[in-house]
View 1 (cartoon, rainbow, N blue to C red):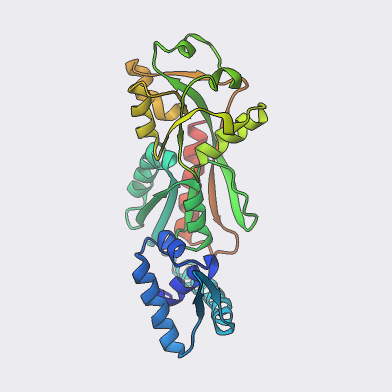
View 2: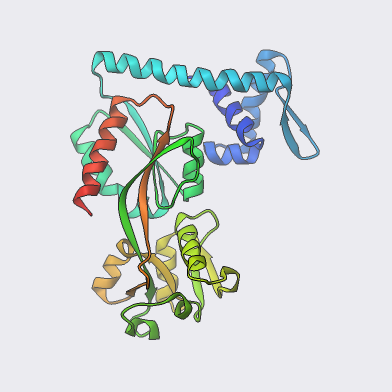
Length: 299
């Protein structure tokens, strides 16, 4: 594996933040600071200036950042080329997923992939869409599956499956009697939404704005971090929400929740996201192809 100190420094240099780097790398902030100091001691010079609660690159730091980025690309190409030559599909793959995808799509997909390729070591990192995209940008993960549009043009984004979002209420709620719910009707009730950075929240707010709703006027009574917690809050009568229809299948069958389509229909893509310049190992290619087939079967 490439020098861990370089990886940590590169992430700090990208965000100019020890806190953000620690979050993306799933490390403690003191551990990040230690790795950067080790690298500075190795070069016997300061790479980062830390003054007035701001982080900036020194001239040496900018140079190290540039070389580090090129080193990581070459290292990945070297590993991939050797495995391509030897026909080795055994590998370690780290997949990132936003919360909804991780809970309701990936378990079955990764389980079937692992059964077919038992020698591939899989690990999964879960965050909201913003966090997962940051992991891709910083080479923390090999492939991501997210539930919202991705604006970074330096990443490859491939839509794989359309997901319908529906108004989620108690069965005796007034909206449950409707065949469709308009945005104007939705905003009359206390609303439970996902946290900042959530792909689901971004898609819902964008939809409401397109329907002429000022989201600042939404009666947001709760912000929660997962579909499961939102379902529990709706079942407790704390408000209504909009959730992926795939996440409330069990509740619909049991009759504990009702799901009503929005008018016009509200959908969002599940998408694969990966580095554009990253050398793609055979195992990553196999997982991508496996996932494409899975998505085709579930359309």
